[in-house]
Image (cartoon, rainbow, N blue to C red; front, side):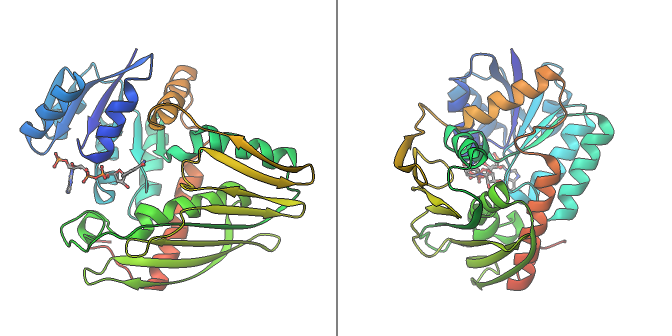
Length: 323
Ligand SMILES: NC(=O)c1ccc[n+]([C@@H]2O[C@H](COP(=O)([O-])OP(=O)(O)OC[C@H]3O[C@@H](n4cnc5c(N)ncnc54)[C@H](OP(=O)(O)O)[C@@H]3O)[C@@H](O)[C@H]2O)c1
């Protein structure tokens, strides 16, 4: 059994708790919150043995094998560094940090301590993305040249909400834009240059963002994200011999429509339960193998993704306090 400690019992930690029920060799044994009542509530909901106020006791708990950082972006570096300093491997939610400097410090700390660290970019571990990788490797659409992807919805402005609060690392880009951007790097590798613009809301957080990623060998990524505009939340990857349509939601697709040299067909990539279980299983695989990072979501790519987000944010003029 791999025994997990969860920091931050909010929305995604609730999904994580549900996902864990479908994982045979894992359990959540501890949870920490800024409020003992919220920690206890989570513990009650998921049958977690220990509820703590603050992270220190959770990190000192010898039963915790690995820590899931499920706090807002602004807390990812501090919570991950604290867990690593306590000798715990870490799965940290996306976006990995507020910026590339923070992400680099997290990776350096993990490598220096010889501990596993991974960004919880769950899309990468889902059947849809695994099948997409196979399709691209098989040359099903020839040489991929263009990725178009968007992810957006309309959320009423609330200055206290994580999505809009700069102090929590708010903004459409870090929360939603990360998914279209990671699809570009997944398919095309890293970009050489990025051109971006966006709309900044009253809190100073980006509300709608569009960016053009220019990759090596003249490949392009076109991405959009918004907390103010409903978007299709789909993606298309076009190559020299066809294209793949990823239907909504592009970050956890139930199918892929392939229009290739061999004709048109739809692949079923649906799965049961909460898709977060696939990233949990990846962490278990890596820990069992003694791997310090996942080949599916490498740490250097997590840093590179943050650099792209930094670049886009700089062009839009979104600045996080303290950076
Ligand atoms: N993979 C996915 O599909 C997915 C989906 C949604 C979100 N996420 C990611 O998950 C992370 C958390 O998002 P969420 O939607 O779960 O947020 P959330 O519902 O607000 O939960 C975050 C939790 O972090 C704790 N926390 C610790 N320090 C905090 C601080 N300074 N300010 C506010 N909360 C603090 C809070 O718990 P206490 O107050 O009890 O300490 C809060 O409940 C983000 O990185 C987000 O991008 C991923």
